[in-house]
Length: 299
Image (cartoon, rainbow, N blue to C red; front, top):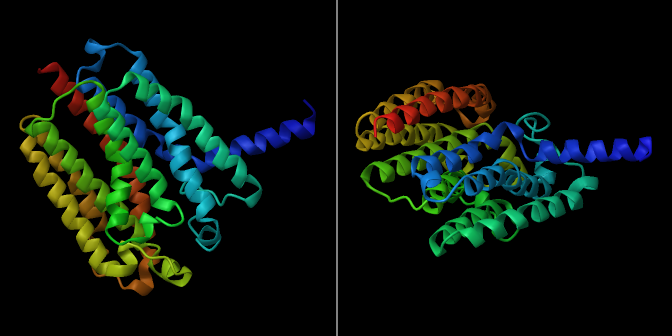
């Protein structure tokens, strides 16, 4: 391979990796693996399903979700000052075709395997998950531009892998499991809604709709706070020691509370709160993991 070809391949790989948002890989792979293991998947089948499923939700799933979004949102991304770092690349047009093909082709073998080893129920969950990923950004659907549905769809992106792990492992949904999933969903909706606040003015200028452009910055922040609190209340239904996770929503509420009266014209101030959110997530994930270990040891 010539030096020029090597540089082109390297540039292509960097673009594809950047488009898949490495900072978010864990946010979809972890829910699948954790729910699969907690549901006793290894005791029923083996390690192959959890390894393949985790790898799928780690990279190909994120490339499909964010890569297609970068292609379909190219024009608006050019005007978004947040793009160009860990929060998303501005994907040059020269990489659009490669990104689409890479996203689709990297997903096909994983999806085929998960369907072949799964059940009708797990396949249905997987179908909902992939549909939500595509529908969020796809022209003609654009769920991301339908207020409230944007938050619901975004939360589905992260909760559906957990449901997939649970169903694939043959787990049952009792009060505790149901409460944990509902709380996770509320947390996801709150997070997406707050994330949209910082882009209110930019989105309106670009003609892009969202829960934040519809409700306004202040009202959206308050709704996000309420959803976080609701998530904490629902977690209490999981019983001891799972109920301890209710305390984990407190930092999120405190972090965004200062923006509850934020004028739309000053929406970009919420970016600092979003950066705190990105720092809170790994800390919360670590604490949730310790809680999962405790629950497993006390069964």
